[in-house]
Image (cartoon, rainbow, N blue to C red; front, side, top):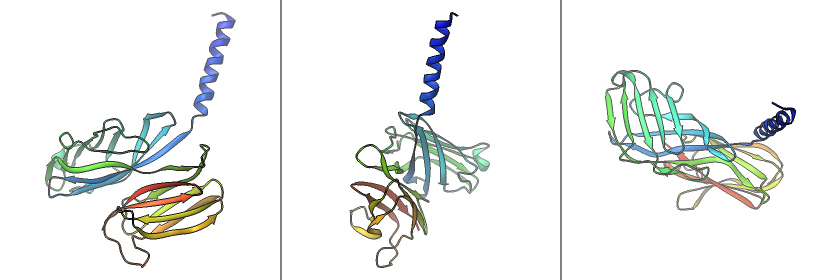
Length: 250
């Protein structure tokens, strides 16, 4: 190989390396919502994160942070979960399903995106769960929805704030974690699905840059316990806003 050709290849390799080093990662959190089994109308729930390089969403990595499956004591710490945002979520436990195994496939109706979820295919999704008797069948309902991600921008592409909610679903308390990249006027409220404000967590106030947390115990502004269900967390930072879903279970 001549020197000129070698230098050209070396420069290309350096450019590729620098591009890879400068790639910015994003994280989206998704939750399993209203995933109901046709056996006793039992419900499974869970949340997982999807970490990806900007511009390459499909080739990210999914990791469950919470997983609760009926008829088994196994959770995300010992179940194997494979997430494909383009087609399915598969949850398995090696071994005999009839003894202590799990084999669940949630087929997606549409590919997931950083900002949109999808219903599961009720004709193709199925489950087999052993360990406390044997349960197998289809699902009555269910979807997978984004619940948290890097959130709001300042109008110039730079993020003003990020918001995360964990655990989600929750009972009795969940923690909202948010970061402000610069000082901003901030407001955080909890709304029901009709849009009605049920709890003000942060009234309109000016906050410095930094990281903050605030707990919500599933109560309204009068201190009354709210019923189980889906609620909307709305955060406004400066001129930008973001809304995330959170599930209260009892």
